[in-house]
Amino acid sequence: MSLSGSVLHWFRRDLRTGDNRALNRSISLAEKSNLPLIPVFFLDPEYHNPTACGPVRMRFVLEAVSSLQQSLHDKCGSHLRVICARPPDIFPELVRRWKVNTLVFEYEYAPSERARDEAVMANVQGLDVEVVREHGFMLYNPNYLLQNTKDGKAPTKMSSFFTLVDEAGDPEEPIEFAGGREPELAPCPDEVLKNDKIDRYLSVPNLSDLGYENGKRDKRWEHFPGGEQEGIKRMEEFLSREGGKVAARFSKPDTSPAAFRKRETTLLSPYLALGCLSSRMFHSRLRELEENYKVAEMPQTRLWGQLMWREHFWLLAGTSPEFHRMDGNPICRRIDWHTGKEAEPLLKAWAEAKTGYPWIDALMTQLKTEGFVHHLGRHSLACFLTRGDLWVSWEEGYKVFEHYLIDYDYAMNSANWMWLSCSAFFAMYYRVYSPVAFAKKWDKEGKFIKHYLPILRKLPTKYIHEPWKAPKDVQEMAGCVVGKDYPERIVDHGKASKENIARMKESYARNEYGADKGGHKRKNGKAKSSEPHAYSNEPSSKAKRQKRK
DNA sequence: TGCAAGTTGTAGAT
DNA sequence: ATCTACAACTTGCA
Image (cartoon, rainbow, N blue to C red; front, top):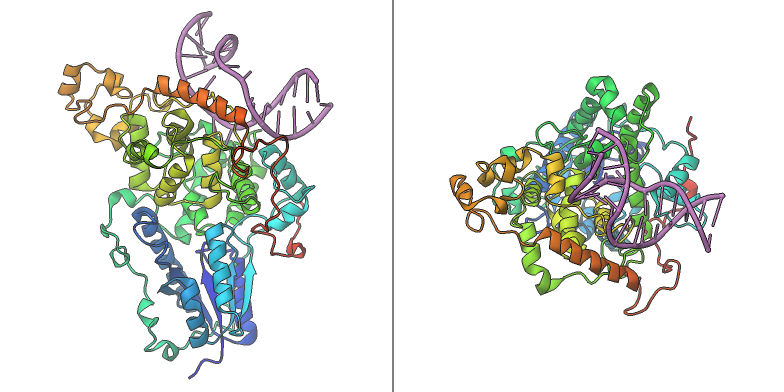
């Protein structure tokens, strides 16, 4: 049996079967032309390696891919092929071997992913393959939201974004998985793949195959099992807590960054970031719930608003150049942060959880072992590294978060680092998180700190947030001598934050932005950029409208 | 041009 | 628990 053609579905940040527009498109194209549908996922050596991606996220990805492979097998007898290669390198070969007529995938909007997709499309040009792309990661087709702006520019203010959403109405409802119905999808004949060098990648590799040292299961990683079923299960579980009251009354600033056992937030971000959970499905279930309950006034702080932050920041990230760094970024203030050699020891202490501030070090330990930190915990970490204490460039912190966070997301990571470092969105630089006061507010007894930093376990609660204040004999009794068992404070927060507020004042007075050429002062308005943005290659006629009730 | 608001500050007083 | 001073930013709207 020989292959006369095929439809290739390329899974990326859409690791699910439900409400997957690109996948349904693949299925209908395959059914229409009676061709086999071949689903693939790539483990790209450039990204899926121990240097670029922490083990906790890598494990989540592998689990999500395994789970997807199982689902596709059970639902329609299809076999997801996991290929270890750089997509631009391998695609021409795949297209030839599998006689691919159509290549289908979901849009991605971050610069490196856009560049990769462009390279793939360039490399298969001339091979007689049609490339079909679908929007699906965001709630709305971004072009539709942009259509409703005055100047085609995404707003930088949440309140303005809410106006856009108001005019747009609710996003489209989630759609059902289209596979598994009659006629069954034609499976790709095995003979075609025999002796194929791609054959050896039919099963999902484990961590050690990918060069990770500790390939064994670690109990600390059990917080986030990857996969679509798990994501949906967790969503339903959260939405049904106390008959829906918890979700309806949810107010982000009231949830605790120190709740490490009985968490108060949804913990769904990893599932949303990798597409195990569809944002439209979550949105639709939330709307249902909000109709039955009186919800809080504040749209930004309630659960629905959390999805809107994601939407808002992605709309901005996709239309704004260099969103993930200062240079060339028109909305990011130019601030003379410590970088390179100057930043090195400070960055190192922060990243290795050795700042001498238990709250900060505990949060960093949580990040590294679990790949997740509560939003307010991220605030503490980010403020401390940048404008609060260490004056290190937010881009350095960005990279550390990118490495360790399971829910790493280009737009959210960029926007939040700019926010916390007062580089964009937020300007009240004199409001500084104290690593002691903020910790006392949420972790009065020091339980969170002791959980992540066992060396401090015997220290009296009185000194848990400030071990350097404990008398020498108390430190010795607790087996935790500052400077020996636990690091000295890297800075005096009181002094450092005052100095840094003054530095921020100077930076603000200079009024320079990342896109300004050196020394050039901006008079008024935003720097203009005419570069094509991530959404500009898509005709807006595809935008759909569904008025909210 | 003036004024209000900005998802989630702190320290100290009441 | 709720207030006020701290020192004072930007954006959006009237």
